[in-house]
Length: 175
Image (tube, rainbow, N blue to C red; front, side, top):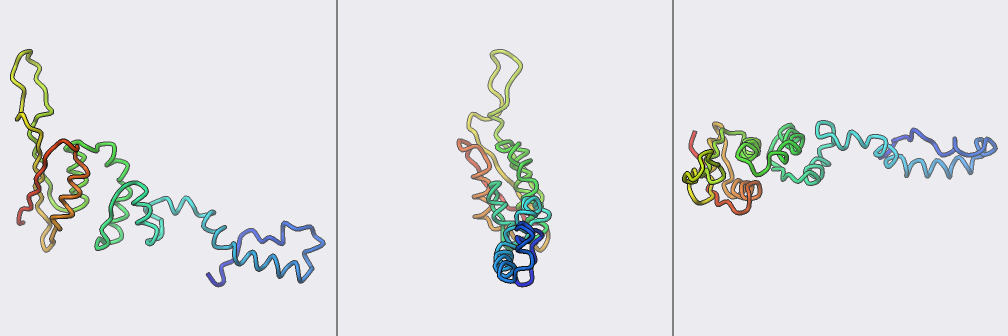
């Protein structure tokens, strides 16, 4: 990065005797030029770890760090929001509400998660188990107007976000 200065010039850390020496100034200046991007990156590390502030080319890596797959076709602000809520998504991972939130962020549409109810319980002893005996869910998505959803990507997202033993189906409804 041409012209990028360092906030901590190396010549200042040498004894005063070398401050006026041209050779010492030239050598430390060369090191300052090479180290300036590294020092500035380290000084700004908190900004790199904040999804709202991180550079755009760093956002995909940050998303991978928190385990979310970003779509390159999304606008920058939508990708930033998705990374920002990743921790909240993982707190509710495997639940219908968590799946609904993740699919809603992914599709920007209306989402309905219908589960078989096999995970519910009854308060009456000896009563039949509630729901169906199988574990399944249906994810119904209504995309926003003038928008399309990649069914294969959505199916992979649902498969990764639901419990492994639960069968699922994805349904995309026309708006």
